[in-house]
Amino acid sequence: MAPHGPEATLPSLAVLHVWCDGDHRGAAANMALDEALLDWSMGSGQAAIRLYTWDHPAITTGYFPDRGTGDPRTAPPSGGTGRVRRFTGGGLVEHGEDVTFALAVPATAARDASLPASSAERYRWIHGALAGALTGAGMSLETVAAGHAGRTGPCFTHPVPWDLVDPATGRKIAGGAQRRSRGAFLHQGSVRLPEGMRSPDAPWVASFLAGLALSTMSLGEEIRKGLLAAGEDLVVSRYGDPAWNEPTTG
Image (cartoon, rainbow, N blue to C red; front, side):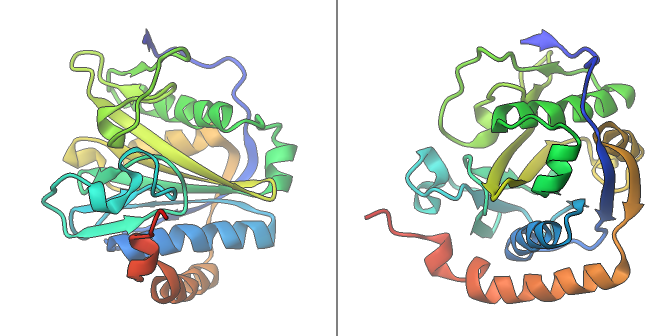
């Protein structure tokens, strides 16, 4: 691990549409809205981010049920009641004391911004912007080095390269998972912060967004209404369905 330092050549999206979602939602609704955001981004050709919190402690698990503790049936006990499979990969994540974000970038925006092609380098880009914002807000953190050997298991107990950790305790502060689709990608990130910093519109968020894009604009009300409607459909067809959340592995 190495102390975080400013990145000299972080790429920037030209425009990023932002939804600081102040409504606390359950796991199924949040995961459905994240997929709906990716669908809108791919259809519109616009990059967008939604920052949000949770209405109760919840667990999300990775898309692939046979990778580590990505299988909801093997998840450890938790104080939460929701357990929903994500559209992205990665391991098990316990939510409730985090602010979460979904960043959707279509192929055209990724190309125009000269974003790296690999998932690992995009992960590094996003966490570079996040680290700059959090250190600017007074937090002490380190970035997990590229050669670190990550292990399968619950996300916040097993840091992987470019995750952010507390240098004093080794506690993981931020992690994420990605999904690629036709050149576009969805990054779902979880950031564990003190309660006063968890709001989707906390002061550090503006710095984080500035690290991702040259300019930002609020996601329009009609677009948000459309996403909410699409999210409701996805809860019924996918994220509220036990067949999705507890898939068989053969």
